[in-house]
Length: 297
Image 1 (spheres, rainbow, N blue to C red):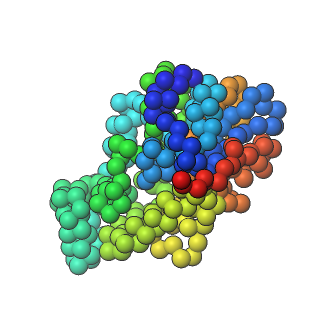
Image 2 (tube, rainbow, N blue to C red; image 1 turned 30 degrees about the vertical axis):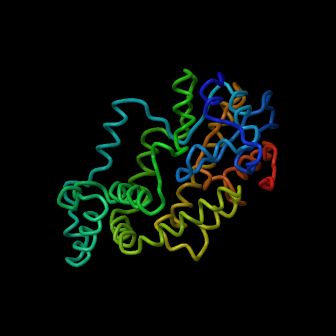
Image 3 (spheres, one colour; image 1 turned 90 degrees about the vertical axis):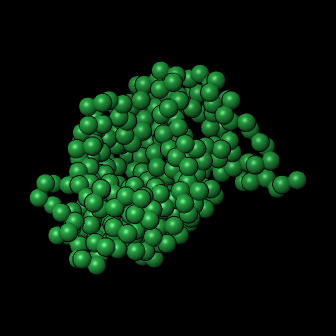
């Protein structure tokens, strides 16, 4: 791949050597060429990419990228907008008590300047996503424009390279809006606005673990009994239910062309993570150039 955009962005600073555990090489199982898998973290800015050894080289080596979901189509966007709506028969007034309704409504007004009167036709998962984005922005300095999420997709589009989606539109809609019953989503929305400090603390822990390359610990934060945030063990189960299908899909494309795979870092680590699923399928997966941070001068 051309390296023009990446070379401009990534000014290597040798005093800030980073953790190779977020970048892995995939080989074996009959593959003729190596591919790579990178764990991204949406709450961490693209400036962090400067400090991942061999990242530019790994990306430049590959002929295409694969991501969780790639939707670059007006019809797909319309499908998502429709999926984000409540069924006509569902009303928040019926799913929340009077007091709960007022609490959720006020929290949304405080963070989004929009209440349930304006947002009440949206699915609870969609409202939760809006609330969390505002929460992360205000409490953690999250900046969507500087986030590494979708960065490599944008680069691939600019360079005209193929982008493989591991989930199709319907699978994405299922993950976003229907992986939990509507009643549970409403309950989760209420708990999230009431105990929003849990969300902030959980994300702080995830960011800290990511910056250290501790992908297994990121998985534990989500799966562990201490986690009381909206990123629950049931979410992890829903995520991991896709591993077998993803491994099969990647098996079909890795054998054709070297591929740069970009996935949420929360998916990758631990004995139940996606990296282990690849190993169980016969692939060799190893960290690329693991280097400890250098002492500052």
